[in-house]
Image (tube, helix red, strand yellow):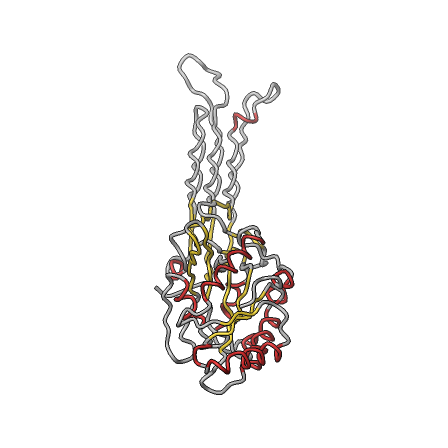
Length: 356
């Protein structure tokens, strides 16, 4: 299934049914009086979070959603039927805004969460409502009001605890395959990852966290170059970022320079995302001679002026991976936040984590 994380849809709530003018007509009762009923309310449009969906691909073909109109009132004080509501299922993490003004309508974070996005019209009043001591035979009624109608933008931001940052081929996909059941494509060429991947990392029987991998970033990403900038929004809900750096790049790139480019692009995209806690993960140490590992890793740390936690791993050989996952779990348990929170945490909070 193609990964779709943005869609535009049109929603229209139902119109309220009109009230009517009617008078009681029965044999032997010549002056029956008013008995016009109210109309029914129009149906409303709701969205509900679904755990079974992970993309907005369903909205490629169906883009228009209309709730049912309310029925008009009837004689004998009968109220018209209410229009049927319509419920649209969306993936968890979907942010809904109006196209015209950009106003936030909903942020769907919880499974089964039902949120009103377009209110149905209200019913019109029948002539019975206007009866009074001075107006015994009212001939007035009111129409139902229109339902709300919008063009809405759906934007999916995946909900994960930990996000992975890095250049193409830094080993992010290999890492997520190593620690979880996710099976993203892995190959020896850049941009193997074309869309976000989620994996659940189980540390113990009842302790786990969700990790998100996005396409690698390159220089100029904040200006639209490459793939990763489009998917950086999927890291905005995370509580911790892992900056994965290839310590032995095959193309002789400078790891320090590559890491700096990532940080520059992150800062250009969203300062709040840039301020999230980040841990430096030096990957592919298995490709270096054992006597060079310490020197190479220390040079990268000093070149970046890195003050936070540093881990040395080989994702493909699972070297140092388990210790990293346990430390991540302890950090997340020590820094609980509301699921999906966009609040940036102080990056210094991770400084006391174990060093790899």
